Image 1 (tube, rainbow, N blue to C red):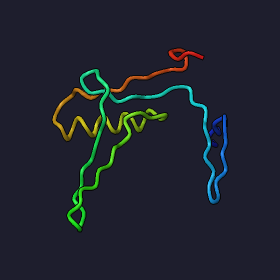
Image 2: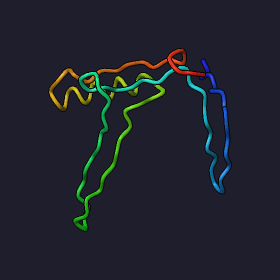
Image 3: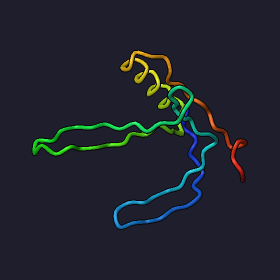
Length: 93
C-alpha cells in the first residue's frame, strides 16, 4: 500500500534544494512533568570546543514522539516524560 502524499501549502526553490511547507493534521509534543522543555546535547570536539545541539521535542509523526519519550524515560530512570497530541481543532484558523 502506498503512502498518502501530504498536501503542499507553500514551496520555495533554492539553488540545489526545495523547502516545502506541508499540511499536517496534528502535532505530538513531548512533555516533562506536564511542562514544555528544551532538549540539548553537549559534546566536546577534538579541538576542545564545546558543540551544542538542540534536539526536537515536537513532531508530526506520533511514532517519533513516543520513541523519544521511551528513550528519555529510560535514560533518566523516570516515567515523567509523556506525549500530548495537539490537533487542528485546537488551533485558530
